[in-house]
Amino acid sequence: MRILLLTPLLMLCFYANYGQKLQITRLELVNDQLVVHYSIDDSNPNNEYLVSLYASKDNFSAPLTKVSGDIGQEVKPGQRKATWNIRAEYGDFAGPLSVEVRANVFIPFARIKSASLNKKYKRGKNLSVGWRPGNTNPVHIELFKGSTRMSGELNHPNNGSFSTQLDKGLKPGKDYRLKITDSKTPSEFVYTENFRIKRKFPLLIKLLPIAGIAAFLGGGGGGGAETDNSLPNPSAPPTNN
Image 1: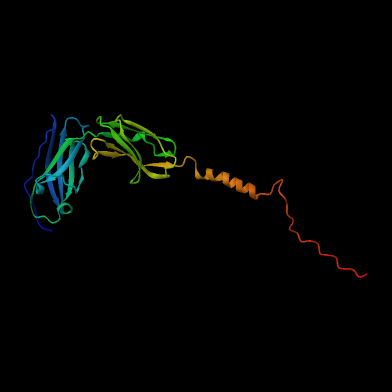
Image 2: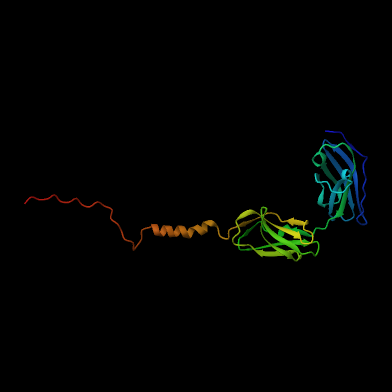
Protein backbone atom coordinates (compact mmCIF):
# COMPACT_ATOMS: atom_id res chain seq x y z
CA MET A 1 0.00 0.00 0.00
CA ARG A 2 1.44 3.31 -1.02
CA ILE A 3 1.56 6.17 1.43
CA LEU A 4 -1.51 8.35 1.13
CA LEU A 5 -1.04 12.01 1.98
CA LEU A 6 -4.00 14.13 3.00
CA THR A 7 -4.10 17.87 2.72
CA PRO A 8 -4.92 19.77 5.88
CA LEU A 9 -8.49 19.49 7.09
CA LEU A 10 -10.89 21.04 4.63
CA MET A 11 -13.73 22.91 6.28
CA LEU A 12 -16.75 23.21 4.05
CA CYS A 13 -19.63 25.28 5.29
CA PHE A 14 -22.97 25.08 3.55
CA TYR A 15 -25.91 27.32 4.27
CA ALA A 16 -29.16 26.01 2.73
CA ASN A 17 -31.32 28.45 4.65
CA TYR A 18 -31.04 30.53 7.74
CA GLY A 19 -30.10 28.36 10.72
CA GLN A 20 -28.51 25.54 8.68
CA LYS A 21 -24.79 24.81 8.65
CA LEU A 22 -22.61 21.88 7.51
CA GLN A 23 -18.95 21.40 8.35
CA ILE A 24 -16.29 18.70 8.46
CA THR A 25 -14.99 18.45 12.02
CA ARG A 26 -12.34 15.71 11.80
CA LEU A 27 -10.65 13.25 9.40
CA GLU A 28 -9.23 9.86 10.38
CA LEU A 29 -7.17 7.57 8.14
CA VAL A 30 -7.62 3.95 9.24
CA ASN A 31 -5.77 1.51 6.96
CA ASP A 32 -7.48 1.84 3.56
CA GLN A 33 -10.40 3.86 4.84
CA LEU A 34 -10.98 7.52 5.50
CA VAL A 35 -13.43 8.31 8.30
CA VAL A 36 -15.04 11.70 7.82
CA HIS A 37 -16.65 13.25 10.90
CA TYR A 38 -19.02 16.07 10.09
CA SER A 39 -21.90 17.95 11.66
CA ILE A 40 -25.17 19.38 10.40
CA ASP A 41 -26.59 22.19 12.49
CA ASP A 42 -30.25 22.90 11.82
CA SER A 43 -32.79 24.86 13.82
CA ASN A 44 -35.41 22.36 12.61
CA PRO A 45 -34.43 18.90 13.91
CA ASN A 46 -37.11 17.25 11.75
CA ASN A 47 -35.37 18.19 8.50
CA GLU A 48 -33.64 15.43 6.57
CA TYR A 49 -30.70 15.76 4.18
CA LEU A 50 -29.27 14.17 1.07
CA VAL A 51 -25.55 13.90 1.86
CA SER A 52 -22.73 13.09 -0.60
CA LEU A 53 -18.95 12.86 -0.29
CA TYR A 54 -16.59 14.24 -2.97
CA ALA A 55 -12.81 14.11 -3.49
CA SER A 56 -10.29 16.35 -5.28
CA LYS A 57 -8.93 13.55 -7.52
CA ASP A 58 -11.65 14.33 -10.10
CA ASN A 59 -11.97 17.97 -9.06
CA PHE A 60 -15.06 17.17 -6.94
CA SER A 61 -17.08 16.42 -10.08
CA ALA A 62 -18.93 13.25 -8.99
CA PRO A 63 -19.95 11.81 -5.63
CA LEU A 64 -17.86 8.95 -4.27
CA THR A 65 -19.58 5.56 -4.32
CA LYS A 66 -17.63 3.40 -1.85
CA VAL A 67 -18.98 5.20 1.21
CA SER A 68 -20.93 3.86 4.18
CA GLY A 69 -22.42 5.33 7.33
CA ASP A 70 -24.30 8.62 7.44
CA ILE A 71 -24.49 9.13 3.70
CA GLY A 72 -27.23 9.32 1.08
CA GLN A 73 -30.84 10.15 1.78
CA GLU A 74 -32.67 10.88 5.02
CA VAL A 75 -29.68 11.93 7.12
CA LYS A 76 -30.78 13.78 10.26
CA PRO A 77 -29.04 16.87 11.71
CA GLY A 78 -26.39 16.34 14.38
CA GLN A 79 -22.91 14.83 14.66
CA ARG A 80 -22.46 12.36 11.80
CA LYS A 81 -19.79 10.03 10.39
CA ALA A 82 -19.14 8.58 6.93
CA THR A 83 -16.47 5.99 6.05
CA TRP A 84 -14.89 6.00 2.59
CA ASN A 85 -13.02 2.91 1.30
CA ILE A 86 -10.22 4.55 -0.68
CA ARG A 87 -8.73 1.34 -2.10
CA ALA A 88 -12.13 0.12 -3.33
CA GLU A 89 -12.73 3.49 -5.02
CA TYR A 90 -9.28 4.31 -6.44
CA GLY A 91 -7.05 1.24 -5.98
CA ASP A 92 -3.50 2.16 -4.99
CA PHE A 93 -3.27 5.92 -4.84
CA ALA A 94 -0.42 8.21 -3.84
CA GLY A 95 -0.67 11.93 -3.47
CA PRO A 96 -2.64 14.66 -1.74
CA LEU A 97 -6.40 14.51 -1.45
CA SER A 98 -9.04 16.89 -0.25
CA VAL A 99 -12.60 15.89 0.51
CA GLU A 100 -15.91 17.71 0.61
CA VAL A 101 -19.22 16.90 2.19
CA ARG A 102 -22.25 18.35 0.43
CA ALA A 103 -25.81 18.31 1.71
CA ASN A 104 -29.20 19.48 0.56
CA VAL A 105 -32.50 19.35 2.37
CA PHE A 106 -34.09 16.09 1.27
CA ILE A 107 -37.79 16.11 0.43
CA PRO A 108 -38.76 12.68 -0.96
CA PHE A 109 -41.39 12.63 -3.70
CA ALA A 110 -43.15 9.88 -1.73
CA ARG A 111 -42.68 8.60 1.81
CA ILE A 112 -44.43 5.27 2.22
CA LYS A 113 -46.62 4.76 5.28
CA SER A 114 -45.57 1.26 6.28
CA ALA A 115 -48.63 0.82 8.49
CA SER A 116 -50.86 1.12 5.41
CA LEU A 117 -49.55 -2.14 3.95
CA ASN A 118 -50.41 -5.59 5.31
CA LYS A 119 -47.88 -8.40 5.58
CA LYS A 120 -49.96 -10.84 3.54
CA TYR A 121 -52.77 -10.75 0.97
CA LYS A 122 -54.97 -13.30 -0.76
CA ARG A 123 -55.14 -13.56 -4.53
CA GLY A 124 -58.20 -11.83 -5.95
CA LYS A 125 -58.41 -9.43 -2.98
CA ASN A 126 -57.64 -5.71 -2.85
CA LEU A 127 -54.18 -4.37 -2.00
CA SER A 128 -53.88 -0.78 -0.76
CA VAL A 129 -50.87 1.38 0.10
CA GLY A 130 -50.53 4.94 1.38
CA TRP A 131 -47.70 7.47 1.28
CA ARG A 132 -46.94 11.09 2.00
CA PRO A 133 -46.50 13.03 -1.27
CA GLY A 134 -43.51 15.34 -1.65
CA ASN A 135 -44.49 16.89 -4.98
CA THR A 136 -47.28 16.84 -7.55
CA ASN A 137 -45.57 14.73 -10.23
CA PRO A 138 -47.56 11.66 -11.29
CA VAL A 139 -46.06 8.36 -10.15
CA HIS A 140 -45.64 4.91 -11.65
CA ILE A 141 -46.72 2.09 -9.32
CA GLU A 142 -45.49 -1.42 -10.11
CA LEU A 143 -45.88 -4.82 -8.47
CA PHE A 144 -42.70 -6.91 -8.32
CA LYS A 145 -42.06 -10.51 -7.30
CA GLY A 146 -38.37 -10.52 -6.52
CA SER A 147 -36.82 -8.70 -9.48
CA THR A 148 -39.66 -9.62 -11.89
CA ARG A 149 -42.26 -7.00 -12.76
CA MET A 150 -45.75 -8.50 -12.53
CA SER A 151 -48.02 -5.53 -13.27
CA GLY A 152 -48.17 -1.75 -12.99
CA GLU A 153 -50.04 1.50 -13.43
CA LEU A 154 -48.39 4.49 -15.11
CA ASN A 155 -48.97 8.15 -14.26
CA HIS A 156 -51.03 7.58 -11.14
CA PRO A 157 -51.78 10.86 -9.33
CA ASN A 158 -49.34 11.52 -6.51
CA ASN A 159 -52.22 11.82 -4.06
CA GLY A 160 -50.92 9.51 -1.35
CA SER A 161 -53.06 6.42 -1.96
CA PHE A 162 -53.33 3.48 -4.34
CA SER A 163 -55.56 0.39 -4.44
CA THR A 164 -55.71 -2.53 -6.86
CA GLN A 165 -57.19 -6.01 -7.07
CA LEU A 166 -54.56 -8.74 -7.06
CA ASP A 167 -54.71 -11.02 -10.06
CA LYS A 168 -56.06 -14.48 -9.25
CA GLY A 169 -53.27 -16.06 -11.29
CA LEU A 170 -50.38 -14.67 -9.22
CA LYS A 171 -48.01 -17.30 -7.92
CA PRO A 172 -48.05 -17.55 -4.11
CA GLY A 173 -44.88 -16.21 -2.47
CA LYS A 174 -43.49 -13.90 0.21
CA ASP A 175 -41.15 -11.82 -1.96
CA TYR A 176 -43.68 -9.34 -3.39
CA ARG A 177 -43.27 -5.56 -3.09
CA LEU A 178 -44.46 -2.35 -4.73
CA LYS A 179 -42.18 0.11 -6.49
CA ILE A 180 -43.24 3.77 -6.69
CA THR A 181 -41.34 5.97 -9.19
CA ASP A 182 -41.45 9.70 -9.84
CA SER A 183 -42.60 9.91 -13.48
CA LYS A 184 -40.60 13.11 -14.07
CA THR A 185 -37.42 11.81 -12.41
CA PRO A 186 -37.14 8.04 -12.99
CA SER A 187 -33.98 7.84 -10.88
CA GLU A 188 -36.12 8.62 -7.83
CA PHE A 189 -38.06 5.59 -6.63
CA VAL A 190 -38.96 3.80 -3.41
CA TYR A 191 -39.93 0.23 -2.58
CA THR A 192 -42.35 -1.00 0.03
CA GLU A 193 -41.35 -3.73 2.42
CA ASN A 194 -41.86 -7.27 1.15
CA PHE A 195 -45.27 -8.85 1.66
CA ARG A 196 -46.77 -12.27 1.00
CA ILE A 197 -49.44 -13.28 -1.49
CA LYS A 198 -51.20 -16.54 -0.76
CA ARG A 199 -53.98 -18.65 -2.25
CA LYS A 200 -57.55 -17.49 -1.80
CA PHE A 201 -58.44 -20.93 -0.47
CA PRO A 202 -55.94 -23.28 1.17
CA LEU A 203 -54.77 -26.13 -1.04
CA LEU A 204 -56.13 -28.70 1.44
CA ILE A 205 -59.66 -27.37 1.04
CA LYS A 206 -59.34 -27.60 -2.74
CA LEU A 207 -58.25 -31.24 -2.54
CA LEU A 208 -60.97 -32.36 -0.15
CA PRO A 209 -63.80 -32.57 -2.75
CA ILE A 210 -61.59 -34.72 -4.97
CA ALA A 211 -60.73 -36.97 -2.06
CA GLY A 212 -64.43 -37.24 -1.18
CA ILE A 213 -65.33 -38.34 -4.71
CA ALA A 214 -62.58 -40.96 -4.65
CA ALA A 215 -63.84 -42.29 -1.32
CA PHE A 216 -67.41 -42.47 -2.65
CA LEU A 217 -66.36 -44.39 -5.75
CA GLY A 218 -64.18 -46.78 -3.80
CA GLY A 219 -66.65 -47.58 -1.01
CA GLY A 220 -69.29 -50.35 -1.22
CA GLY A 221 -72.79 -49.00 -0.92
CA GLY A 222 -76.26 -49.63 -1.74
CA GLY A 223 -77.00 -50.23 -5.39
CA GLY A 224 -73.75 -51.68 -6.72
CA ALA A 225 -73.55 -55.25 -7.93
CA GLU A 226 -71.77 -57.64 -5.59
CA THR A 227 -69.31 -60.27 -6.70
CA ASP A 228 -68.86 -63.68 -5.07
CA ASN A 229 -65.27 -64.69 -4.94
CA SER A 230 -65.87 -67.96 -3.06
CA LEU A 231 -64.86 -71.22 -4.75
CA PRO A 232 -67.71 -73.37 -6.21
CA ASN A 233 -68.66 -76.58 -4.46
CA PRO A 234 -66.78 -79.54 -5.86
CA SER A 235 -68.74 -81.67 -8.32
CA ALA A 236 -70.26 -84.90 -7.02
CA PRO A 237 -68.40 -88.05 -8.18
CA PRO A 238 -69.99 -89.91 -11.14
CA THR A 239 -72.16 -92.93 -10.28
CA ASN A 240 -71.97 -96.31 -11.98
CA ASN A 241 -75.25 -97.64 -13.31
